[in-house]
Length: 323
Image 1 (cartoon, rainbow, N blue to C red):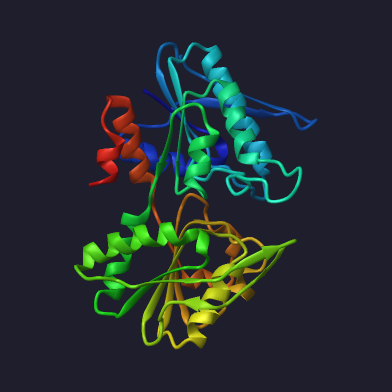
Image 2 (image 1 turned 120 degrees about the vertical axis):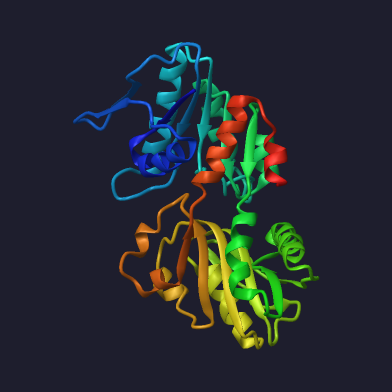
């Protein structure tokens, strides 16, 4: 097995390699003066199973498009070097939110990204908590694996909320299925039935509105679950609505912490006490803001390491996710 992590995701790659009891294989990335670049492995991959780690989000050094392009080019270079199989390990998958036509002549960018992976020779894509699982599965014609962070979140939450009266909330109707899955998992861990709530949400031309809560949150600890925190606007509105409806406190779990825009303004609500995210995206945008004190980052590298082991040895990923 060969394990590579492109430079932008080297820290995460080293965490995965440590869990596997190995080190990252050597590669080279060169940037040229005109903005072009090249990536190549520095050791033989002939007839090897190769895993390449790259999380696809923008930062101050590289745009999401640059990271995507580097990953695709590197995968093609691996296939040209006679790798037997190349698996893309993508903790955060870009463009997963644009999965349907919401206006006339809209692009379906999720499908276009899938086609790029296929064209580059990728044999398999592994990610975690993609925005729309059905759209993700339908977009790709190669095998895909979508991991879930629910068990990791439940392990961290139980210490804080075991004795609380709880309600699980989706911040919009589209996330109810995700909330139901977490409701069943956490209820099983706590050995009790947990109620479910959701909040209305409408979006048009960049404007978002709607604060009506369907369900009872009065006197309860509310756990808001979503796949990501972007600007924090949706989560902030949910926290405010819960406070106005008499909730004791609000906790949030979201796999991907983008924290774009003005998170310090959107997430300042005092009843929003903790935000659990994973390290698919480091919370670098929070810097020294006060919001960083609310954020707890969960390491998902061990989960990816277990999946890589199962894939390499021919084990069942489904069984792993049910453990």
